[in-house]
Length: 99
Image (cartoon, rainbow, N blue to C red; front, side, top):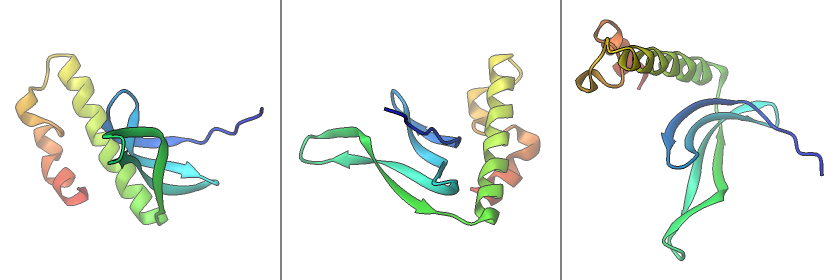
């Protein structure tokens, strides 16, 4: 079976696989969130809620994601501590605005 794959733009929650963030669906950006199955007391990795977002919200999400990626690179290189997570001090104020 041919499956189409679309771009995952951000991952804001991760547990074994991406659980929340922004991704394309049908070629348009959406916020996604995995569904928690109360009846099974576990996440159903095949079920996600999607909500379309505007180009402006996408741009802000991508900017905030880039801030997180730069923090992670600095952390992995030993140039940032957990106390600064999720943004380097010089962009922490911007991260708060975007969040």
